[in-house]
Length: 242
Length: 290
Image (cartoon, rainbow over all chains, first blue to last red; front, top):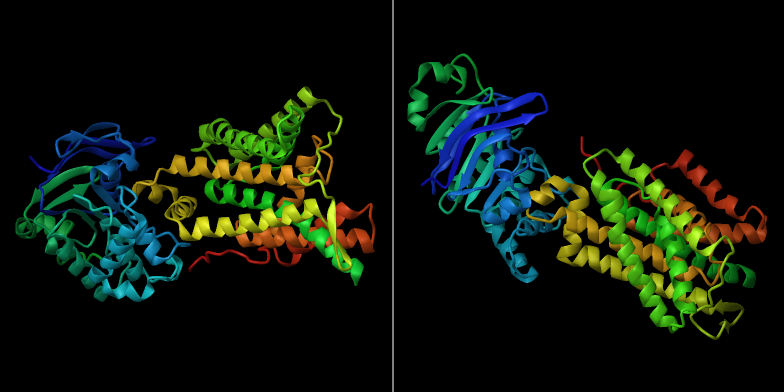
């Protein structure tokens, strides 16, 4: 049984049908990447899983239990942590406080959470010196690290990562993906990426989304091998993705 | 000089009341992005609750606790009745709902108690003590003391406790707070209860100094609102500094310039700030990054 299974998921925003029947699965221990152009429905898929978007129809099964329609607070308690697009680090709280709040989904004493947050800096040494800096003072790459660290504090069984490379300098993107390859040792990851090259480099499996539907799924080398797909979505010779 | 010291004491005393109500404004504004126009009515209702409880024969301290518990309950009802049903709407319907609630509260009290102002005795039997040239009124001393304690409590609560951080997180980004597992509706409930109790405390403390009347709420709220703008809207320290300075300014204005225009000075200062420094003394704590 896959850890996460999505069947015929439909999400509407008013008149607009953002997802028109998405079906995919994430096996425990894997990194699965969801690729596609802007507006294909990648972020909406993650938002539906974490409860930020209400599914119109379809099923979302986490560990065999239906979670479609539950609120975000309930879903994160079940073990799905969503690191959203745009980092969304609390601007008026410090880095440490931001990371500590990531543990709000579980019962633990403040001192325990504080210790765990300190330990998080071993995985993210670049932000250790900003422990007491307010969120708004950080750069994009630092914010991304804080956001991922905060997401990991939930001790999730499934981590949803939305466009962690967006707007970052190439060297920072490398650093972020190095962290993802470390996270995967302990956590299952569903990664949304526009940067297909990076996404597939860490993934066990990939899906290609197009206007709200999964059009293709396969192992990274299979996706690379498909010439047409490569040209259209994966930034082959014709198009280079950001 | 002696007169100035005396005025300073009285000004800080009345300013502390504005500061407490202003703090209630700021906390609700930060949590919900809405100005609660019924904040002043919280003070008025609490003062009446206190009058009722004392008349019912309760000892003063017990009446005080009953009135504050009543305010906590009002905070819950206010959240569920005024804010919660409209929480997914824009700020405008919520603001109008708070104005409606303020009219409802004022007229309910009017219907029950009639228009005659009531008198509430002070906490202490001794009216005050003479300290050198300054006469320290016992009720003003109490107001200042309670305000100092609350400012310290407020700082500890928001800066040192995880619950305080969760409240701050909720006021900064509700969607992300809920993604992390923070119960947003609980956080907002706590904010309303706390703000209602703060407003109530201000009303109970100031009641022996003023008369307890239907209008006391709107008078205090207007000054407190001015104080939050002067301090920098949304800023906790700003609300306190703004409230205290407003109290001092109007007390000095009344003594040295004109008594009938006492209430005018607060708004003159407000207008000056709106023209020359609209972001207030402290401005925005979180700067927008380009």
